[in-house]
Image (tube, rainbow over all chains, first blue to last red):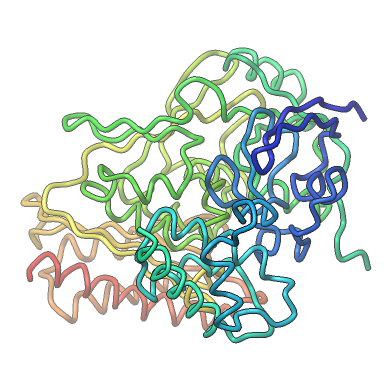
Length: 159
Length: 296
């Protein structure tokens, strides 16, 4: 199968990758670039473990072809922290105990981060709706939702 | 069992013009598929139901990513305009809130970054959540084929599960909605296995508006999801409401007529019998809500 040469910006770093047409963005991140924070759960756009930002918007990276991403900007969980400082949602998911096994956490962090970007002060219903595509089998979600509320507060205090 | 099957091999093309896309697709009937957000096609390929030799990515082509609203002509929604952007559009929320409501019921935010209304129509699943809104709002598809552009009415577009009147070489470029009827109110009620994000067991779309040409003074449009091989318009129920005074009884009778029009199947999400009962109940609820908003 022919390879397609693509140029992408991943976590602010330019990358040039040769990908077959049937390689998903998720596989490219994990297998070509060793960005294994992005998890493979269902491969069908249902569990959200592979959520990344594509040109600023969250997508299921198992449902995107790598070859489509030529020229795109991608942010994975590895790119959420700013230098040595965690993003607010990363801080609060730790402080609120929103992690158990951790498999869903990267996708949750990306979805929640994107929510807080487009809506800095979400209500509980809005948080639940934004995270509906991120399945967690451990926590029962309560602490995850508290983490997002706390992150919103932290962000607003930081101004 | 391989729980993480990879996609079968295929090649990916990105034509520069619609003419080029139509020409390529028509030269490879059965082998090449137009490719938009991929939320249905990639799942079906992964599961081995589809094995196209070529995916022809058409979402970058002219006008595909635009939404245009004209206060006299209505709304034109480019085929690649994703559902999250439809939901966020002030014009859609103001003039076509039913369309935004239907989009919001689809899967999750990340999936809706990729999912499109036109893709939902072309996929032609009887469960398609936005199809009902497109039917009752009288959407017309803009199609580019080997003989150039043409329009397709949605009323005759669906032929069966996954089957439409589209032929090799056809690319749907947009859907156009005329201005909604004056004073209209609409709802989409969806019953899934959970409150958000699941496919529908049954979906009922209802739109009502004052119409002095009807004996009742009001016209209602209805569309049902997941209850027949194609998205279903229960015309007997619509006729009943146009020709009888609107009362709690006539609304209930129409809901029963809607249930009678269905031919649901048993599947993993629900039995045929349950579906038929739920169509009756959801239709009654949808019609009552619309009626309350029209008169309240």
